[in-house]
Image (cartoon, rainbow, N blue to C red; front, side, top):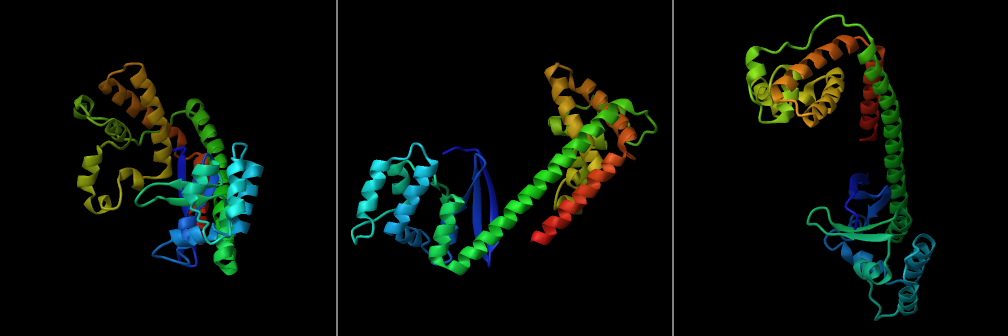
Length: 293
């Protein structure tokens, strides 16, 4: 199975249901859905469901429509036997024998289980309980709506960031706020490249920040507590530093250049309207996420 996975979760009337995105296709956890009927042995409701002739017919039809590599011969054999007392079926057997893509199985102690395309997962949820199915669909749609909202916000944010990067190279320098490096800082050898950026932008290493802010450090690092403007500059510095490393520039010289770049960017961007718009976007995303919880 492809390892390009993204994971999410929905809450269906107190039941947590995992969502796994594989190559931009959503798969809903049948294992989690099955816990609605049997929290101790969720694999049993799935196997019972897959013994039904109507279910096997539906699964096969879905594969015929969506899967050019579906093994129809094996499917026909299963369909003929389905419904009889001796017929047994599991997700793993179905996947192995028919080359299914509508149902997938993921191993893992904590995040493993059986997942299915929404077309299939909703059918299983309906078999468990029509009412439960409606709640599953409702929460899944909320998740997709939120994903679309986030995509729109990211697209808008990227446009604003492009404008900001243009401003950096065109606007006049006004004043200095980012700390100027001391001679000791310039000469110090930093084992972690992240600290090169931290010193260039914040004037201190991660450890120095933790030592100065022990309470805040319990819940995050200095980057978690900084403002949006510093994060924008940090993103630019990361790209710049990567290019400096590629060019073979030594750490001391890179640190000096990065600090100078950070101070110049701060001067240009601190009162920029696009930064204010980004801050407004972030507030909207935060408010929207609070609404979904």
